[in-house]
Length: 498
Image (tube, rainbow, N blue to C red; front, side, top):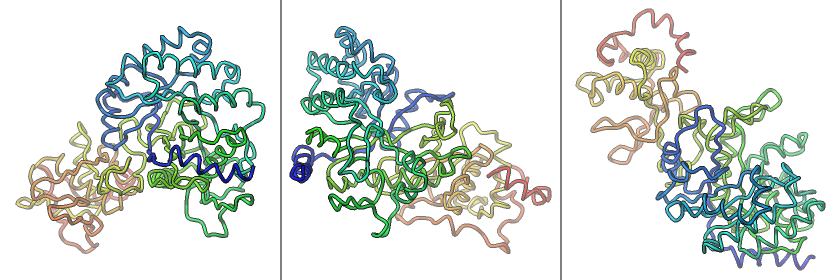
């Protein structure tokens, strides 16, 4: 076995070492206000997302994804698994309807047959491998098997004794399914789909797993987890689980099947029993995960070997059942507003929001002008935004309307507050945008100006004795509404607009 463990990384590297890892995203649809397929695709393209996983094979979504180049993993829902696994005709019809009807315009690259079937739907386990084979046979008949891989996502809970990774193994009761399944993946050049959730491992560890270890935060050497059998150091839970899966396969004599993580993420909100489901932790986890994956870091056992990963998930799904965290795994709200701005700045990076880390706060389309004016009053008053560029004759005076002026003020406040959570709302009339609202000689705070220099919004906040904020008639559209009553209500407005 020791020789096998030494050869394992060489075998995997020889077959998959040249592939570059990617970040994709899962698209759930349990939303009360689900965006249209065209809106979803627009968001994906704006965020440089080129790999998605659908939990079904929705026709409208597949049509919207056509001719975009986005690589799509479609799914056979669990409720359809029994029928497909027992009928060649049913499998062939499914492929004809959901694959052949859409390729090549829609770039379907994989089919996920079921989801966590062995743990969520064990009564269907006996037909799982049959379903994969029948779907694959239908692809072969249409000469699509080389471009579309077939697999099935597993919960990481099928791995027992996952630490140290070198001692991990799949639940032995699942061998009658796992052995033929892995042989199928091996023979077809496919990959093991694995759902990896360090959040749950951390929550269930009774404080044995440090939070920093779950979040990819740097650890001092004496805090790293060491596999005593291999002397490999593990700095995060994610890598340990992935390597545990590799070792589990090796014990079944499967050494050249790669792993794709079909789900991983962290919730941004939870109930009282989930104190670590926070925006900060979700941002930290997903930001660090994305960096870890796209750098082709690999794992301690297989450094440099791609572990492509799909973030769970694109949208918060408010219709999901309790607990509260189940509704809050998304990177975006239904209206496309980021739940948080990921800590990513590299040019072209997926979900970086902008290639230069430029994000702006702008007035929402269709917002009530009176609400905009009130929020504008606050920003240029209690909000301490320097609105002098909005003076008549100054560079940002035109266009002279409440939308343009409030956008400038909202963004200036957003930038001076370090783009922190909750500073671009203004009672619902503002939203975050990745489009630079600068125009002509009016360079907005946070923008790279024509000379490439960032305008630092932090410097825009005037001091308490600054006299530039006189009667705001000069700054505001049409009326001077910053009155004594507004000054008296400044503290109230802080709560109202932020």
